[in-house]
Image (cartoon, rainbow, N blue to C red):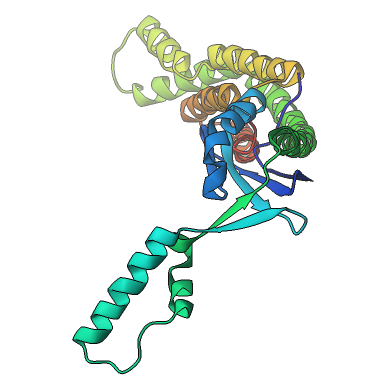
Length: 283
């Protein structure tokens, strides 16, 4: 399945109308219209067409008349008459010498003059469909670029993770021996059973064990790669997995004071943040 970015642009013309669609990031699908009032009856149908192709992103829909549109201008004579009469009454009360002329109606052109184009619904909707397809194609192209970049970053995460696994091999035994020797030195002047020292060293070393975190991190990373491979609507699922990856790597960092492991943890966290930045723009 295709993976879409939430950023894109599409346009098309038909039936005397120009349709423009602009898309940017948003948590949900948020559609806004800018078009003449006489097109309001078609808003719900156009909104439904957009929902069929997009699930996330703010989409601004702009529909305007083209130069080739056939327009009839109608005058609301009742409103025009009321405006002129009201202006004449005000003029008399104020003792003005001049009376309002018909030119004054242009100040109220939105209320008096109506544009009534000849609307061919089939041509209008065809233009909307072409604009939607243009937007979809751009979002897919942008999505392909983002996914390629994310795969490169995942490759870096895997490289650092392999180094982390290598650094952690034998770490538990090493910590145990270090702690046992330190405890022996600390209690050198105290009569204490060596078995107790061994037990305490084992408990302290166990707290630095990161094998479970390594296993969960590897599992989350495989899930992330599978989601990217399957495609579709993946933004929120990947965002959740990235939070889990950060949780595991933070735990590993807090458990181990080893320099090599800390260095790998910092590098992995940096790469995960790069993925989080990119995933914010994926549907």
